[in-house]
Length: 76
Image (cartoon, rainbow, N blue to C red; front, side):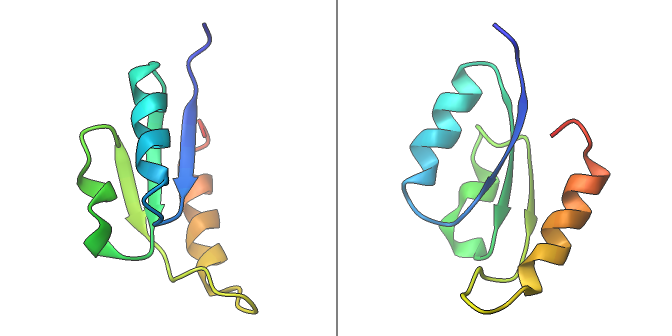
């Protein structure tokens, strides 16, 4: 099986099982979070994380930080 590095964006609780499953399958998981209170960035299944502005309709504010992360991590 090919191993990948993936980026999960989102703070929903439903992201946790996805992160866990991807990590257990051997993939490297990066997480972009807009709230530090959801604890995903501290999960043992997340290899790297970063903060971005909340994803809100009508704003492009979070996308610059997400783009910068992707440029700094071309393996994603």
